[in-house]
Structure formats: structure tokens, C-alpha cells
Image (tube, rainbow, N blue to C red; front, side, top):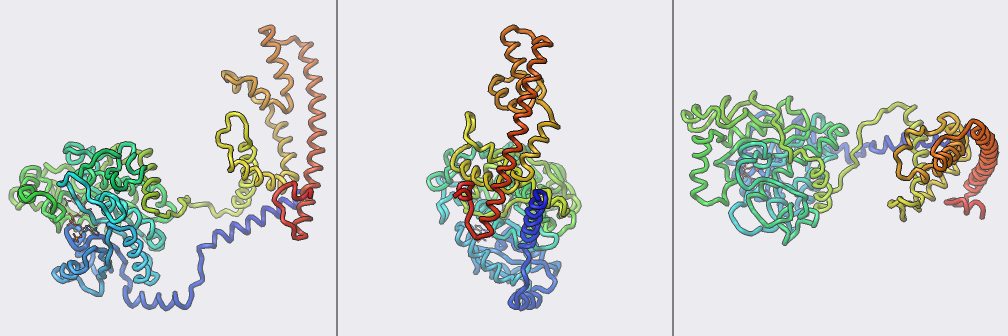
Length: 558
Ligand SMILES: NC(=O)c1ccc[n+]([C@@H]2O[C@H](COP(=O)([O-])OP(=O)(O)OC[C@H]3O[C@@H](n4cnc5c(N)ncnc54)[C@H](OP(=O)(O)O)[C@@H]3O)[C@@H](O)[C@H]2O)c1
């Protein structure tokens, strides 16, 4: 009887688990079918790619490289639609394969609206690539500029808004085959290099006190200290690289999405440096071309970002992609080719010079990363799906898992009961206690008590070695030795205390007799309790069958 009830409960849970598993499945509606036909007409077999910031520099050249293959439909997410129209015309973007859409990364509302409009525009098509490229660099002013949402602009445009965008599009990306998310990082956020660790200021989020406090005007920096524009830019790149790793850890296995970050090289002539003084803009490219050899042209940088979106090698997740090693190599070549190094040497380097670059201790810091995720989620209001790892579809595991879940809830309820040292007890403890009572009623009356008795018999006493060295010897003995064998241990402990030696054989025999008597009493008590719980469980069943609401033992008694 008890066993059959248990099987019924387990199989019901099994069925429920089956339905949960299928909850993602949706019958396609007529509207879905019409949308699918329209999407086929618009996109054909092309992959859908979103690139933020295609109106300039790296994003512009990446869009061009993608479109040149004829295998992608590119959505250019830009703040200035007129500028984008002019750029698209100059670059000769085919309007059948390129769609410009407005997004102002200075505003979370605009990011949300963009994602909504994108979902409508793509008509049910999954999103094959999301490339978070747009950024601003504001190193010159001694004070911060603020976004619509009151955050320092570089942190919001470069990082927070992209963080929110990934969260809003994650499901659409996960639905694609071979999906990828690329976050454009920088050597400046990775301080294990000369560019990142040798040029002041250094990216450093410290304890994230500023972000924890909301990073809202007047708090400009994520570390909570005073404003430094160049550092804010570098911090934003550090955040993007950490986020790429976090996304990989949390979602790669479950979604198949390859998350990566890249350093495209120093694109010293790009408009990113528009807020630097004129002399800097004039001499920086010359310095990078002829002194460090680290210069990369927009075209070549665009090919690099395109490669991470396109090359089958780059479907590997959790990587920080770079090209061709140290910048000083190949400097001689640079002198002969006006700084344009393609295919070898220096910070140039073609398709086959791609490599998985090392990441600094700061990028890989798990504690800071966990906090970055938590506080960024709070600040942006991002809503992330649970990070579930793939599960075995084995049906036996589902049944066993259901029982384990119930038993676990019961054990948890016990642990939540207020006691000295339990600082977790509170409202949650009380709720769990009630839940535990109900679970107890369902399974405790059937196998719970029997299992407990069998467990005590099979497992025996906890060895003395396990208890030695405890500063709470007596408390532990009281709590853990109330079952069979406990008495003997207590007698031994008292003897040791009084005489500092073990008891005699006679005294032990006496203790054993007492213990056997106690054991018999314990068995009688268990059988009695089992009968009472069996009765209670039957009452619950009867009450439920007659439509009564049951949430505690008292309800049943009443
Ligand atoms: N340049 C380098 O040396 C270098 C080195 C390492 C990494 N990177 C990274 O490469 C990426 C591209 O930089 P880049 O050199 O190509 O710079 P860029 O030419 O200035 O391009 C930046 C893009 O971001 C867009 N953008 C700026 N603010 C925006 C906002 N509020 N909302 C929406 N879009 C906005 C810009 O739009 P507008 O056209 O309207 O201005 C532009 O399309 C950045 O992530 C940068 O950090 C650059």
C-alpha cells in the first residue's frame, strides 16, 4: 500500500517533469507560418547578423566584409540613421541585405525598443550573430558626461547597454544553429600586456563599490572613486571581456552560443579618437605605425571582426581572439608599406594569424565577475534565464530525481528549524517548515520512518575520529547520538571525564544492556509513529479527495 502510493506520487511528478520539459514547445500558429514565408522571401538562406555601430570605423568595415560574402543579412544598429544612410551609400551596401535600425545606447529604453522592433522585423527568424561593437572614448574632460539613465556615458554605451541587449536577445540567438555573440574588447582592458598594463591609467574595477551603489550620477566610476575618463573607457572594455567569459560559463553548454571577445588591434585612424586633441589625432597613427608597429587599418580590423563572425574556427566559445602576437615584430615591414601590414608581422596579420590570447588575472577574477554580473543585472534591469546545464533525458533519473527532490525538501525543512547557530532561520524557514510538513505527510508516513531506522542500523555509529577535535563535543554527542549506540558513547565519555580512562568490561556490559533496552523502546516508538503517520496520510488523502484544502497537519485534524 505504502509502496504503491509512493509510486503514484513519483509517476505524477514524472509526468509533471515531462510537461515542464515540453513547455518550450509551441504549436506554430497561422501567423507564425505567414511570418515564416515572409522571412524566407526577405532573408532567403542568409544568416541574420546584428552589428552595433556600423556607421563608422570597425563596425562599418565589418558590415562591408559580411555583406561581400553574400551570406549574411546585416542589421546595422546605429544612433544616427541619416549618417548611416550616407555611409551605406558610399560603401555600396545592398539594401536587400542591409537594414539600418535606430538604437541610442545612451538609453535603456531605446535598447529595449530596438530589441522589440528587431523581433518584429526578423519575423520569427533566429538571430545568428550579435556583434557588440559600438563604443565611445571620452578621455579628455575632467568631468563625466551622463546618459539618459544617469550613468557615466562610456560605461552605459560601451558596456551596460550591450549587457542589457544580450539579455533581451539571448533566446532569439539560442534558436540559431551555430550562434555567436562577439563583444569587442581591447588590449586596454587586459592589463597583462604593454598596451593594457603599461599605460596609465590601468583598468581596475576594484571592489565594484560604485556599481554596487548604482553607478548613477554623481557616482561615475564602477570602482566608486573619482572620475577619470580614460580609465572609464578601459574599465568598460574590462567589463565586456569579463561578461563574455561569464556568458560562456553560464550559457554556452545550455544554448550552444559561442561567446567571445576580441582585440581588433589599434585602429589609430578611426573616429574613436574624435574627443582627443588635434595634435594627438595627427601623431598617434604615425607613432603606432612607425614606432610601435602596432597600427591596424580600419579595413584590416574589419576583416578581423568579420572573421570571428564567419570563420568555423571561431565557433569556439570562451575565447579572447587576437592576431599575430607582439606589436613590435614586423616594424621594418611597416616602414615599407605605410604602416599597413597584412598577412604577417606586427599587429597586422591575416586570417591565419588569429590566436586565442591570454586574459589577465583581472579579466579572469571570478569573485569580481560574479559581482559584476549581479550588480549590472540590478542596474540594467536585465532579466536572465536560469543558467541550467544540459540534463540527462534518462527516465529512471527523472523518477529518482523527483524522489530526491522531495526528500531534499524534507531534510531542508529540518535544517531550517530555529536552533543555536542557525542564522538562516526566519520567514523562509517557517515557510519551508510548512512545506516540509506536507511533504512529510506524503512520503514520511510511507518510507521515511522505515528508511531512517534502516539507515541507523546499516550505517552504524559515527566514528570517534570524526568527532575528535570538536569544541562542542557534548552538544554534538547529544544531537548525533540519540539513536542506537548513543548511550554507550555517552557512558564512555562520562567515564573518561571522571577517571580519565576507559570503563571496565563489567561496566560496559551494563551499558550494553541499557542500550539494548533503549533500542527496543526506540523501535516500538518508531512503529507507533509510523502507524500514526500512516493514519494521517490516509486522512490527508480523504480530505483532498473530498475537495478540502490541506496545508498543514492541523487542517487535517480540524
Ligand atoms: N580604434 C581603436 O584603436 C580600437 C582599439 C581597440 C578596440 N576598439 C573598439 O572597436 C570598437 C569600434 O571602435 P571604432 O574605432 O570603430 O570607433 P568609431 O569609429 O568611433 O565607431 C564607434 C561606433 O559606435 C557608435 N556609437 C557611439 N555612441 C553610440 C550611441 N550612444 N548609440 C549607438 N551607437 C553609438 C558610433 O556611431 P556614430 O557613427 O554615430 O558616431 C560608431 O558607429 C569599439 O568597441 C572600440 O572600443 C577600437
